[in-house]
Image (cartoon, rainbow, N blue to C red; front, side):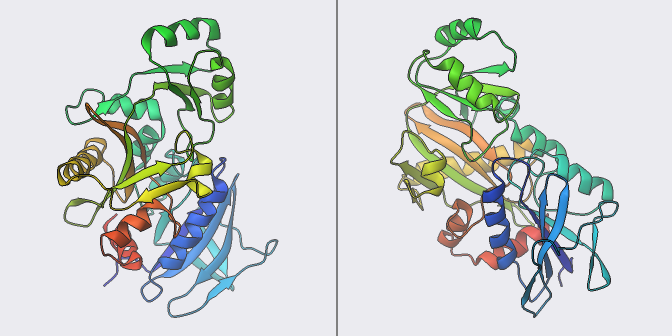
Length: 338
């Protein structure tokens, strides 16, 4: 018997990733088991939380036109639908970027006592900040972290150039510490365009990380808790036509996503074991995805995605299909075991 009756999928966000988030949220809502749960789709953007559509058990999806969408009452996270007050039993968070991925939305649900998918507010905040997250992993013995430099807005750029040249090898990647979908990222082959790249990254947030590029194969691996143990999904190798796995490569067909990754059994075991260990080290929950570079001298951690993309073409659904699992049953596992 299911633990929950009504599930609200929150999507959209206050960041550049909001459109990607909407696609992920719509796909997720469509795959949640309509025989078990009532499903409500909430578009949440810049403080306006509105019901886009809902699907009662064993029923068709009902869509509200823009301008006539019921608004969420934030005092208790409820909504009025057809003169009936609906209290959500469970929240499936599909907000990429702020505030759904940096812990703010999680903190709100924690204060209300409403269970939700994914990592808690503290873990979400740590994982969302690339520099902070790497600092939780720098001293472990099971994965490498590339050298980097942290920059806060207002730093003297002339001094920064000297630090980059003395500490890092080119190419380097300049990126916001708290962004996703490759927004604000620049790959640099020399120090000449550093100031432009840093300012571009600052357009996404007030903190930037300059990270030494690592040569190798780009891999990613999903991981989740099935109610009994932490399990890794089949890894994917990403082969891009572009210089790196940027927004164009991710969403406009400029990459191949090979699943399962064409690597040896030993390398597959390494990636999956490392992914499970990072999940436990950070105290994650729900389903997350962790990105790596497999280099000659070992496996390098890139970043963790606590709310990974979830469209039919996204990486986690591909891993789930490759593992021989049904997406609807997989989502039920995440909901029931969060």
